Every structure is written in C-alpha cells, then in structure tokens.
Image (cartoon, rainbow, N blue to C red):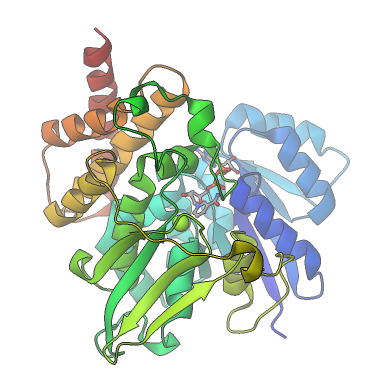
Length: 394
Ligand code: NAD
Ligand code: MG
C-alpha cells in the first residue's frame, strides 16, 4: 500500500468534499497536507478541525483573516492567503498528490504550480487544461508530473486504455474515443422553451450533483465542449477521433474503440468518488463508498447524437479548438462570465452562446506562446464578454 500526502485545492467544493470522503475512508493510506478554498472560511475551518492539515489557504484575503481567527485554537494549521498561498501549498515538497478541484480559470496557476513541482496531479479543473492546452501538457512532460484525469469521462477513457500508451492512442490500436454525455436537464426541451429556463432548473442535474458552474455547463453542453478539448490534450488525439454520444442514463462514463472492433466501456453509478478513488490510489483499487451498479434496475441504455442547433456551445468549443492559439482560453473566459451572469439572473440561458460567440469574434487570436499570453487573453476576454452582456441588455 502506497501512503500519500494529499493537498486538496478547492476542498469545500463538490469534488473537494468527495475527495475528502475518500480520504476519510482510508486514514492509513492518506494524510492531508493542505486544504484550500475561495471564500467559505467557516466551511474550511470545519474541514481543518477534522483533517488537521499543516496548511489552510483562502484565496480571498478577508476570508483568510476570518479563518485565522476561527482556527486560533488549532496551532498545527498555518493559514495562508491569495494565489501565492495556493501555489505554495500546491508545490510543497511534503505533499506528493494534489487534487486540482478549483473551478474555472482561477485554478490554472495553482494547478500549474503542482505540475511544475512534479506531483501526482489529479485533474478535475478541466478549464486549466482547456485554456493552456499544449503549454500545460509540455509542463507535465518537462517536470515528469503524473497527470491523472478525474473528470468521469476522461477517467473512464484512461481506464479503457493501456496505461503506458495514454498519450499514444495510434500505437495502442485505438481508432475512436466515444465520449458520453448525459444531455443535461434540458435534453428534451424545445429550442423555444430554452429561452425561459431558470438557474434553479439548470442546476438540477438529472444524474450528477455538482457545483453551479459545471451544472450550467452541462445544461448548455459547454461542459462536453470543454471535455472534447480536454480529451484531445490528455490523450494526444484530434476531434475527428472523438465522437460525443448522448447517453441519458450516465452509467457508461465513456468508451474506447480499437482497430479490431472491440469497444471497451467503463461503467458505474454516477458518483465522482469512483474516478477520484481511481486517481488517488492508482494503480491500486480502493473502496470509495459508491453504490454497486444495479443493471437490472437500470434495464436499458439509450444513445443519441448531440443537437448543436439547440446547444451551440458544443460547436463553439470544437471551433475554438480548431482555431487554436488563444481561442480556447477566450472561449473559456467568455463562458465563465456568461454563466455567472446567467446565475445572477442578468442573462438568459440562450444568450450564453451568443455572448461567447461575440466575445470570440471581437478578441484577436494570437499564438499561445506563454502562460503570460494566456492570462492576458483570459483577462481581455472577460472585459469583452462583460461589454457584450451590457450591449445585449442595452
Ligand atoms: P464547486 O463550485 O463545487 O467548488 C469549487 C471549489 O473551488 C470550492 O472549494 C471553492 O471555494 C473554490 N474556488 C472557487 N473560486 C475560487 C478562486 N477564485 N480561487 C480559489 N478557489 C476557488 O465546483 P466543483 O463542481 O467541485 O468543480 C470543481 C472543478 O472540477 C471544476 O473545474 C469542474 O469542471 C470539475 N469537475 C467537477 C465535477 C463534479 O461532479 N462536480 C465533475 C467533473 C469535473
Ligand atoms: Mg465530466
């Protein structure tokens, strides 16, 4: 049994809490080195009392002050703040495993710090990879970090591939990746009825319980678009070798097709503790507290093609990947701004792709030659997307 010292970036989120649930089940195997969160000091304080990390980091400075006073009687935990604090614990020598579970572009710098320090990096934060693509994968290769996918689809694909050929699917005899999608809560809605759907409806996912941002992404199919890009980088392939299959039961988490006609699928109850436990213990297998699959109760599997007329975000993501350079970073930033506006009631659901498309059109694409360029384009696209939202409501 390999003992691991773990840092959880985004510990108070949906993935973070599932990670800590797996840790809790295996105290002999995992210890917690650091926990981080954005703004929720009280929630992070409660986790610190249970897991007694050496470090706790709040991205928000005021929240860090609050956490410090909440943890006055817990001298073993040192409180840090801001992005420097996040990057410090992500790269700390004492931890060998980093769960990258911050949502959105805010996760890129700390995830990259973990990559550069050569950690086992458990990648949930798909936005970091979508934004920086080749630069990110080059950093992984340069440091020898062990990058393991946590996104359920990518973890499924990983499990269906020979471990030594995950970046060389051609040599493995792989002909296609079949990326499954639930279709989200609006899969059967007409184009017209999508205009008036609410944030509460969008966040009520039929199969998965997730953070708000990814729930909206699942509803627009942007999540599948980001995952298409994620799959191309992780498995060194191209979109013409990846086919999205809407599978409303969310039992098959994705599939890999081989030259001999074999199609391998990874299945399981829709519970993120399975891919999390897979990454944390890999190549060993450990209990994750997940309900056993009852195929008799499920009975049938269904498959449909995605409808990019009703859900244009999937097409926008594929186009941005084809454009290359900084286009995926702009797509991601515009999406984050549009989703936040939708959640605040300032943008309709069907205007999310409109804002993304207009932001892409208004933002010059340049070579993604450095992380500085990526961060600058991310910032530029956020301003542009906010302006586009203003124009739409004017
Ligand atoms: P969430 O909103 O539940 O949690 C996000 C975490 O990030 C929280 O701990 C929050 O405090 C922290 N955070 C937010 N903004 C921050 C900032 N600016 N700086 C530092 N920390 C910040 O999100 P989630 O659903 O757990 O998703 C996390 C990531 O995992 C996302 O990238 C998502 O796409 C990916 N993912 C999630 C699921 C899922 O089932 N939830 C599945 C696959 C992939
Ligand atoms: Mg996924």
